[in-house]
Length: 205
Image: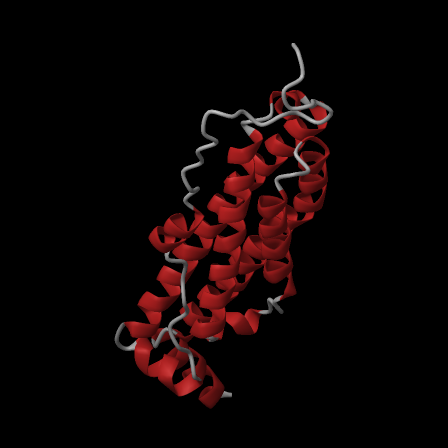
């Protein structure tokens, strides 16, 4: 009994409890990140179909969004990803690619007044913007959780406890890199405006 008491006090003093607490916080924060990314992915099919109704000939952009969503949702996102920097980087890259594709889709939609006026499109766009805000909040919480955990893992004497129990620093998001991936390209439609569906080029106005 005395041995167990001494062991408990020793582990607590060496940061074991902090490691456990921080690790659980990371898992909870990560679950919220994944949840918000899934919420965004669920919006994509309806968004693509709505845009297609007004801009079916924008096939390249529509295909890019569909393929980016397929890639982002095909990954097995489990807590094990948090212990695999390469898998984490792959996950982040896939989400960054989808962010970029969605940005290009929204840029293209600016060229279609009828699409912008569509109530369903406006609702989906509002949902997407809200989800992007939730993603930002969830990511920031995850980053803070990882920072607290990694400080504990690297600090003495808790670093000795971390090594003894196999705790290693967790990967985090590199915000600057993802912003670069998600930056929308410059879109130039030239002097010829896109024709809305049903309009015949050259028809009298």
